[in-house]
Length: 421
Image: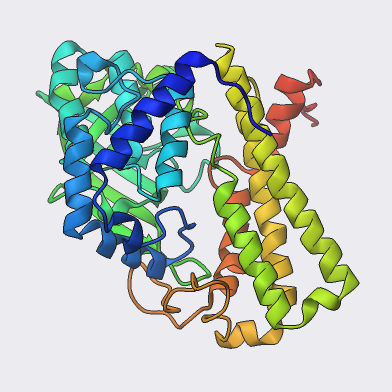
């Protein structure tokens, strides 16, 4: 099944497909599987080695020249002004060619859009080019140990000292903090104001700035999350986006900016992973087990549902309608699916998984069995990592419980939870 995206989208597909064919370095697609899920530190190291290759650097330069890094940003700030539908087509064509979309992480997807909406002209001219060229690499300083999902309750303080803000507090569950040199921090600059009104959104340099970054060891051995102890970090008032006390509005722009650019291909890594597990089931003689066959059929069904959900979102974008609660539905579906898929993998591989014996199985994507981003740890096989780390997907980027609330209240129109007591 294919969706007719209209003549303009198909014309763009032809244009971008021709450009990719003419500009991709020949060896780039062979360096690594650019679209494999990153499950552990071994995957991260393999990807980092590929990104250090001259072919990747050449590709990055050509994308930059064509304004295809941060291409969804407006042209006046260095992007191409691509809409969500064009971004989906672009991403799909890159996938077909087996080459990566060079991204700038949270700088591109979260900080940049907030700067574009809320910053002054001078701030845009300073910060946005540094994101595009990779000078500034951001992590998110929102979550705190004592507040869970209550973003308005942050305790991290920001005190104005001359032309600077001095920040003290603690942040946690910070993805990629060990690779970042900047953090966008939500801090309380007016303790006397109401919860939402006393917050400011500050871009804080991390190097030599009284910020201690401690990796958090995950149960799979990787350390992709960190916690930060901030004891008097300084940032110029120029780095306050949206003005003092206006951080809540800026933060809402940040959190609301993730859209459907990957809708067309979101299911593909799960599809590949599914067929790898089918091959493992064959090697272990489990495809003759009717219960395993039934569970594999269920997994295939879920991946197909992801594909059709992506097509539905593309159709919505093609008709120039804003997506509704699709993001919450998608997040709930893939995270709960992947948790159950990890349990299925464990049942297929069996006890040998605990000894790391599944490292070499599964279509060649098993990696070297290493599993740390921050050093140390024993060998885990691919399916052991899937079992352990897929559980985190039901928590990060909005827990399954929160997603169900969003779907119930915003999509189905059900009443909010009754507060008892």
